Amino acid sequence: MAGEEEDRQKGFRMLGILDVKTPCAREAVLHGAGGAVVSGLIHFLTTSRVRRSFDVGFAGFMLTTLGSWWYCRTGRARLLVQQRVLQDGLKNKVAFEGTSRDPGTKTPRDPGQLGPPETMNTRDPPSP
Image (tube, rainbow, N blue to C red; front, side, top):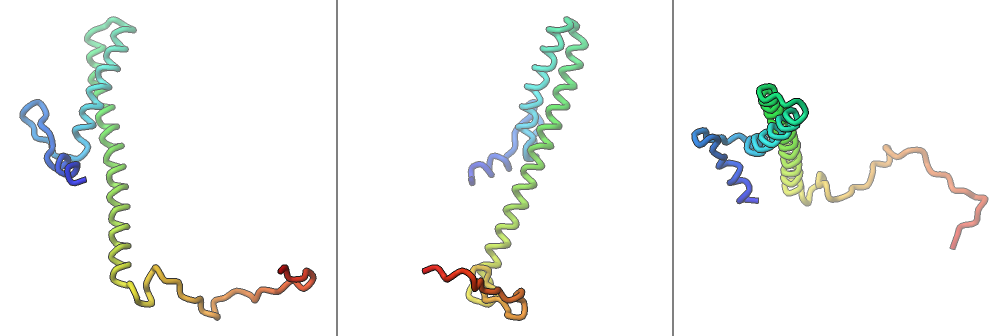
């Protein structure tokens, strides 16, 4: 886990000059490059138009990069929210352990909050 966080914080160098530290950017650019190659090659093989195939490949790069980046960022945000909820829950458990507000202990319900009394079925004999 620690090595994975260091890799994400370290970033990567794009085109040898840009140091990109945004999470998910590396994966998005790699997916975009693959999308560009696939879309441009398929368009070229079907139409044999070089310039238009380049344009389609560039559009494929942009759409695939943005889509991959958005998908990764939403998943990352969802994971961070879950981590925050778990951390708050652990803090509450430690803070309230042994008290009446301890989430791990079950307190008896208030008799005033109980529903209607359960009636016993008198027709059937109790089972042994």
